[in-house]
Image (tube, rainbow, N blue to C red; front, side):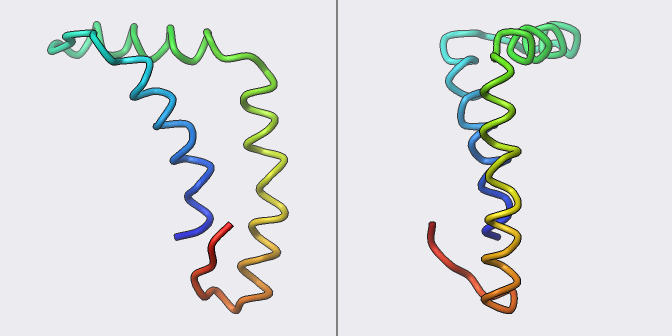
Length: 69
């Protein structure tokens, strides 16, 4: 579960991006998703990716057991 925090950060930001948007049909959802992806800076993605090795190591050190950041 601890390795999913990077994805959670992404989707929390995506949820904030969608606030106030009333999207029902598939095509507008795809367009909103692409707009979100394009609106993030490279640093947004790099920060998440750079945290992965530390999280992986924590997971290995804890033999896969749950840990808090």
